[in-house]
Length: 75
Image (cartoon, rainbow, N blue to C red):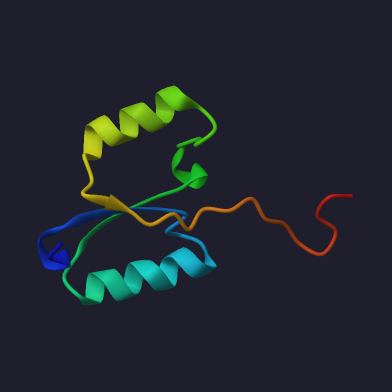
């Protein structure tokens, strides 16, 4: 796959890891679609995910989304 002609979906593209992945892809001329829960997309809801794929029709996905928290996470 020639990435320069690709559209890549990056769930979690606004996070720590995802922002670096997005930056590298864009530096190679890749069309990047960065989505996150912050944007209103909940990956736990199939209807949300189906709608997102119909809307953007990406050539590939690099999943950088994670459920994370701080030092007291889980308490």
